[in-house]
Length: 635
Image 1 (cartoon, rainbow, N blue to C red):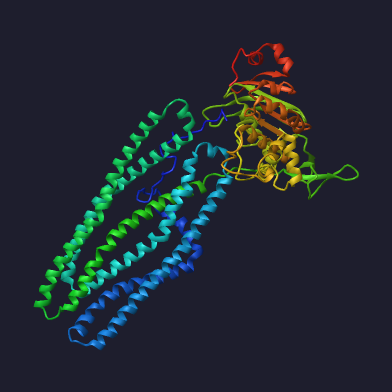
Image 2: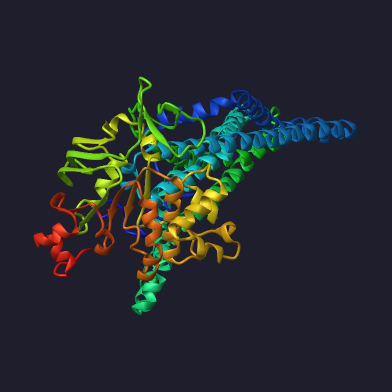
């Protein structure tokens, strides 16, 4: 649509694959509490399972912490005295404790997988459902890559956090707290040494973690640039070869790849330094604690060898949760930031529809009175709130319509026109003149600022949008075919259409002959937007889809622009049959296709500067005459 301003970003700047916080990237949410509250509402459906998870987490942590404490009596009471039967019993008890902890860990992990996958499936479904309610204006201002990243990067990050991070964060916190308590119970003095080392570790985590987050964010940005560039080059491969642009394309990739290498090197260097640094500090802490603890065990009668062994086990355990908690917090914050972006779309203003007039199928009784029918009669009527039925005739009128896609720029200036039932109205003019915008307003894809648009004497704002759009058949310049059979794609215009009606629609559009030459005829499966068909064949299916819908009003937006002259002549009779008895709005680059229009509107800069039939406009020798005779360019 030429008139519409689309705020797309340049390819490779973050709208393509690789966009988003990534696995290691960090992005702080704007509203942590509010977003967590929304996530909790989704998790609230599994309250009983989450309570069970909490119980299993507590038991698992208690077994982990308690199992280490059993080392003390194991050594003091059984190994040193040489009590082998007692040692066997104690080992069996320790084995049972650790086995219980392992089973609890396995249990809560499986439950969280169930909860998380069901939760993200619900979020994904709600996101898709909400997108179907959003107006076209929303999609005009958001790139495809930006919206796709909500379903991929953002929801994947939420899934990862729910799967692992929430449970791990709670488990690590419980383990850390329990370990510190048991260390204090065993030896407050040795615990003080450990706490000093923990402060040092936390400082290291803060320094390395801060730089790591910054460099990983740069890595993700560079990855998005590389992936976006690759996607752009693959899509434009034919253009690259036509203009011998391969050397420049390779040089552009080398520059972006090198930038990504440098960013990834810094990120991985700091990211990889975290665990070795924490490990070495842990070993230092272990060595100091071991030396001081040995002195206590030798010189003190109350601190025994078993106490030292249990304490050293806790010393090895205490540093692990710190690193894990830091990593899990980053993952959770990234997930909340992702959830925030998802909920931002879910809370976007849906398309407003205050219409009360419905489109219903009708039939005539013996007296000629219209009555509602629950089967396909081929006849439609508008059903007003008071029950009155008004037959759909296709009378469309614009009365001083003013419209702009935003408040700063007006696209249409006081447009007034009418199309009586069965008339063919054509719009011609330069790119950006407002041709497609007018047809978009008939569909109520956008709301006008001033004036009125009526359909059979009814203001379109009073008609339900679903009913309004069901009464309009649209053939767009840009075809889009869905994955499925040829018949399914034609039936997209009317899902309840029979095979015979599908074939009749294809024949009307002139598509039947080429469809029957396909490997499986109407059951041939199309994929990749019908990539195995020519552009003309794809457009013919698009026209057949509109014919299958059998609408009273038809909008052809450059419908034959992708069809060669020979094919256009072949389908001309079919198009005439399709348009017979219908109100038709035509936008065409080829002026030869609009010569038989009842009225031709010549638009420039959002205003109708000429109107009349083909002969009248040629006689005026104005803008249309210049376009038709080639004195001016129609683009």
